[in-house]
Image (cartoon, rainbow, N blue to C red; front, side, top):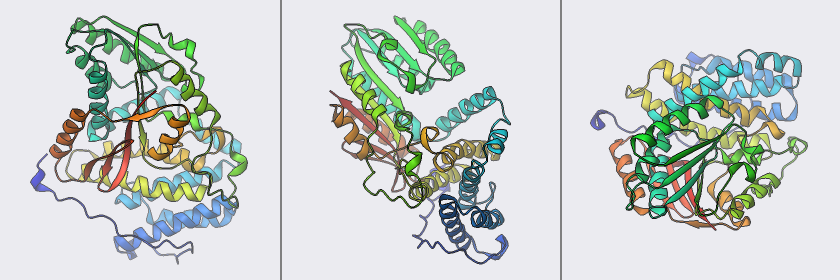
Amino acid sequence: MNPTSFSPPSMKPDVTLSLTIPSSNHSHSFKPEERGVKLIQLLLTCANHASSGDLHCADLCLNRISQLASVTGDSIQRLAARFATALAYRIIRRWPGLYKALGNSESKSMNIGWAHHANSMFSQSFPYMSLAYLIITQTLAQAMSWDRVIHIIDLGSCDTQLWVRLLQKFAQCPMGPPRVRITCVSSNKVMLEDLGITLVKEAKSLDMPFQYNPLNITLMDLTQDMLEVKPGEALAFVSILNLHVLLAQDDHVDTHFKVNNKNDIIKESKKMGEFLKMVHSMSPKLVLVVEQESNHNLTRLVDRFVEGLHYYSAIFDSIDTTFTIGELSDEERIRLEDMVGQEILNIVACEGLERVERHERIACWAIRFSWAGFKPVNLWVEAMEEAQQVIDSCGPYGYKLVTNRPGSMICWHDRPIYSISAWVI
């Protein structure tokens, strides 16, 4: 990467959003800025129609969007294509037979393998997860540097990049390698098996006493007994982009367009409350959480649709920049955007227990953790300094690291993308 060969992209101007349907025009008759405004207007209008049940008008909007959007166009065109697909699926869900037939077009094993590959590509192509992993491993290594028996519980990441680095850090402890046990919770059996093989091999090379405990279940089904926490263990929990699934609840009855619960920014979640109290009862030394820094857990479709447009616009911009400087092929970019598109699809098309991508901002997580008896703690200073060096090495492309208690934000320009926070009892 040559930092001098590329200047950071300019930020998009603020757009006054209109809910009226623009007159029909073909893509080639618009300048890129005008086309972007038209697409946003059409998407918001379509979201309103889909939410209120006016399927005819929603279909008209989707037809017009299809003339302007493209999965191979500029970032706004590609973003619009993903949100339009999500709206189309939301409409199709009104006919369960049709929806299920479309949903069964690929095998489950193919979807799992595809997701694993796309997640790995995302971690390798962008500094977001690398920064999060660096901060987590440094913070854990410092907090547990004098502990001789360590138990880390991974709540769903199963990423070898994170855990290999942590084992290497533990191997450098002042008193030599401690006895380490890593428990990983995931419904993806293939990822669990691959992680186990890699970690056992790495621990052996480090001459480290090691035990791997895979739990092939969903986070929803996890119980305290399954974790087999033993007396004397220094315990820590790590959740990477997964804790929000516990916020899923049967709230379908409140999702109609006419319901406008502006006071539901912090919606009580029985499952989340019980889970965090269970974690608290095990007296962990540290709980580390990485989450999407956006509020996609709003009741009204239109509210979370607007929030999603702003958030994923920044994601697509960062993908666009990486593609422009030649670090992604066309195929890789499309595959990454397919992965992001699955999040958008769940946020827009699903309701109730099926809507699991219920991201919340760190301010909301701070309240939830405080309800369960946790307090925020600063991330390790040296980890933050090293993370900033990684940011600087990426060049002037728009990545930022912002520290603001109760956590830190990894940003694209001025838009926070992921939050990292640490909690103690």
